[in-house]
Length: 117
Length: 114
Image (cartoon, rainbow over all chains, first blue to last red; front, side, top):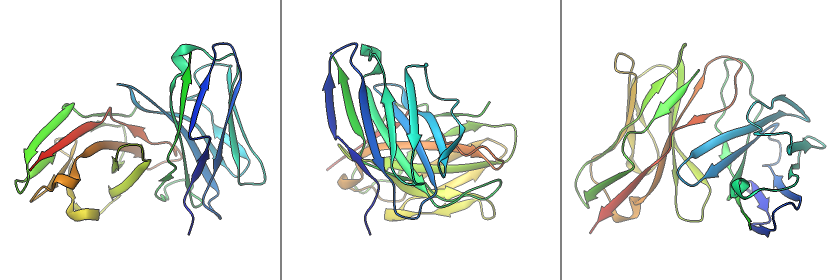
């Protein structure tokens, strides 16, 4: 079946503009995650959704970052007033329902490469 | 706080030789440990995981990893490297509690020469 998809694959924007990044998880996956991959920084957790709610937003770097998920499916990560340090690859992952001590593997999308000029 | 260290930025190995990519972790409880691989311009692909049970875990593409609790390590290994194994490898950890996020290492680039 289809994997996790993300759009756009590449986004170039000017400093100060707002951007929206989209993630379509695997059908039926209730958990959704956003990560950021910066050069030399590895992968950094941003936010986790279970259904439409976000029990863990601890990785969002500032209040310029927000995310929502609707219908338990598509998620949008919004960055307002972009800065050059926001340039990175933004990765989305999804997994079947997971809670407590259970674990289900996360499946990653190809990412959106964001460049802020 | 949980963390993962991958002490090598790059590992070079000749095709046919065994390879090891190192990972150590730090968590306060029992860890779940993972290896992911990233090929150029591709998302991360799951290789293997340790949840509980046998310390030697076998995964995709002939890779395996050994969980060593006393050394807090989870090194990735393969008996005979292929040129096509050249990629960026990430080790990750999460707690076996309610915390769902993965904490990743900074990645190790594996370069397998012909």
